[in-house]
View 1 (cartoon, rainbow, N blue to C red):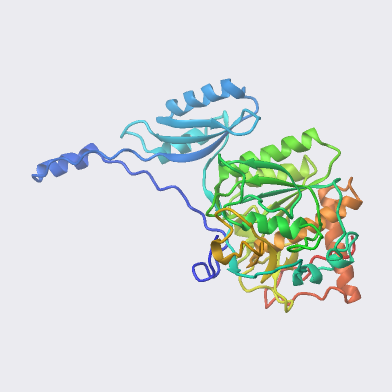
View 2 (view 1 turned 180 degrees about the vertical axis):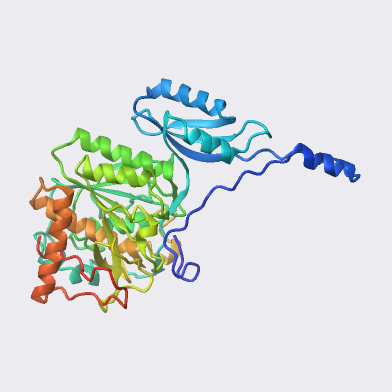
Length: 440
């Protein structure tokens, strides 16, 4: 969890493994010539990679053995090699150069060019960062963002104490975990190993914006009571790897294949600066185009064009920027033509863990079970909740139809005066449409 003072603008901070560091025989010899005893050779550093074999290569145990063989053939050793998901073709590998004659970087590049390798990428870290302030509460409160997007006018009438979305739509929250009695969690999975409990607070917050129950406690979500799949991909510091996200997306695809008649939405309030297309981008695109899954992603909090952020730049995803309670684009919100919709993201009130290490972290009040945060991380689940509302009424809609319907509803509400356009603060080329739940 990032603090406002420490991270005034950053939302997504990549942590890239260090470059190769090797002690050469020549350097040791030079030291000896100068009268110094030769330094003990430092161990060659390993690096973490995500590797995907081409479908034509046999997967599973055979693929595991084949990848080991390819790694050795390219001058490296695999300190660890673990299969991701059930496909049998995707692995996370910790590799290092086999000897001083090889550079891990150049060896990895040669391996990536091998005809049996479809993708090989550094296992970079994705991070969710937000701005926070404590906000105690003793009874259910309806946040300004819920009111602003017309959720009280939707089919569930968020805030009336009794609305529910039912169970025909499922939402997958890929985040730090979800731990709160006010969320209808139907599945808990942790893709970093260990517990799916939220030790950070960010994931619980986002799940609350999507679907906090409409009752007499805490807050209420855009789509109250929607079944939530808690897919924890980020650790207690709000950081997760490409490998954890790839494994989670593969699990979403497997669930969809087993439940083809149940519409679902993925909410991802995370990302990393990545101008180039990467493995996660490809999986998000495949989930949308091939499996009919709606995916909502955060634009980012760097105050720049989100074209350089993954997965925000995936064109088929619903990419979300943030605005404040004065209907102005937040100064830290990313912008640009890749942003599809805007949503409330400044000083948003939603759920917070009531127990565990995150309960009192970052100014949270465990007795209240709520917290106030800002960021495109908060805006994204608002749009995911609206998408779930739409799918609860039109369960056979494709992701493209859902995206189009949300944009059209926002435009109609703007034209009627219910949904004023957002002041873009000079960010030309960015949509001024705020999402509108009142139509569904």
